[in-house]
Image (spheres, helix red, strand yellow):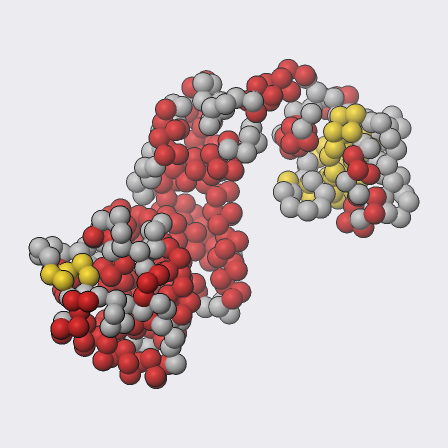
Length: 414
């Protein structure tokens, strides 16, 4: 029997609560099962129970058999000294903590049909184990379920953002800049864009938000794209030469260290998504007086937010995809699909974390509203759910279904 099954029973109180006693025969009532812990330490934090009428608050550990407490070495770990209850499916040994004190143990009884159902789901070869049964769930239940999963996905993304906040000394503009850069390269050039954002701090760009050409020179130069040998046709290109001349001065002024130009990938990509074009669009996005971050936080609607990210590359790129090589005229516009990618993956999580850290529930709710007002993502995972009978109506739903597929279905945490 898997412990994860017992965790599920405890979390959702699906065991026989009327016949829940400790090994001394004292009745136990569960007031709050606590917070599920997937990291090291006890399985549930901050639980509240009553044992024979006395209320206890603390941590709960769950094992298939009580002897597993020793197999896992918990008897030598002080982190398990404050356990108020040890819940097991089989009690085969008395348990003691690292101080030698007995740990209160309770036998969990449950309907074996639940376990049989669990096993059938875990052993199902389909990527979504319950896909033949999703139609049985009502629309109201599914909607509530997806909202909870969307919040869970935002919480899971907050760890990366909080690390950036610490790393940048709570410079929210720098954090936004790094997040946007991360997703600006799509999947192929994500890492080079991240490296570019670290090599060129936003504090330098901030000084030139009134001059897009200078921002382009900073970005292209630090990206290593102004190296003489990277684009053979560029040496006679006046725009390329102007950028190179400007960057040589900026490089000395700010002590910049360019990346190697060969890290950027152009093969097997649509020309409109070439990093050369995307960097110009990024420059347009950053050349905002008053700061992009403040405008993001002030945005009250998805259309207002989207207008910040639907930008055009500079005029030079209307007739180019790479430096020095002309193409058929076409305005290189970062459209709705690109804007949605940035909003869903970078902006919404940042607004959510900022609202949570500042105690502004209105911003947290606005972040969720941005997802509800954005179109659903279309990918392999949403296709799988559509075949299972659940269609994502907006980005909140698609984000929830991605979280469910990646964190639960694929790991068989049914």
